[in-house]
Amino acid sequence: MTTTSVPHERSARTTRSLWRSGPLAIVVAAAATALVAAIARAADVPLTVDGERIPVSGFATMTVLVSSIGLLYAGALARWARHPRATFAWTAVALTIASFVPSLTADTDTATRLVLVTTHLVAAAIVIPAFARSLPDRHLNR
Image (tube, rainbow, N blue to C red):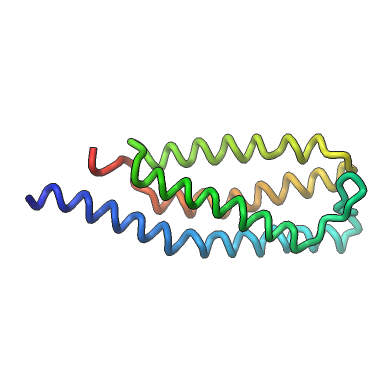
């Protein structure tokens, strides 16, 4: 009886850890991407796409939105994936790389493209390790 409850307890602890550390990582990533955008704006990078200026707060907002979706995905993996940590890490890295495409093909200047890609990398460097650390290597109920 003890052996069946221990994996469940460990899985529950891991999920609690994810829900504690995840939101903090999201806030830190949002602040970091806004800081990158603010520094770029101060350095006269236009931060415009299709003639529309991107507000610094927009970087933080999108970081919170996309990272929150990632947090929900990580939570689902903790419950259902055979190898939650690896599945999350590989998926998150692949999606981060895919997120460069719109930034690199946007109707804007090169400096803005570089800032957009940099903010994706900054957010990913903060959020992916924080979420992955909170996930188990293997699903404990399988």
